[in-house]
Length: 146
Image (tube, rainbow, N blue to C red; front, side, top):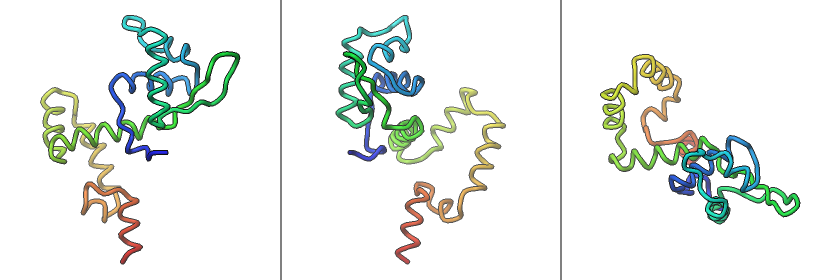
């Protein structure tokens, strides 16, 4: 199975995953019913997307009840969000500054948000602060090699 960070999901796949995360596990019909009513896709469309998600390893068949297959997410909401943010930052050459500037200019980032970010950065281990793109797993591996 592919690592969670390697699963690239389309916007529509993320919408289907959002519905599945909300219910925890469910059938294609249950997933379809959780999608916005205004633009709710056909049952067969949702079924196709769920099959694609299964091929990608993002969902798995949990059990079968009657004729209905019950699926559960194999990718956490958090890891999917991290992947999206990492992809966005990559588009900006790895720098968060353009994104932060946009959020500040549009009023989506306020002083309270900045204070929270400051607190998060202060709590971050020193070796992660030196290498902003690193994860705690990267720095642990680096320490073991030394």
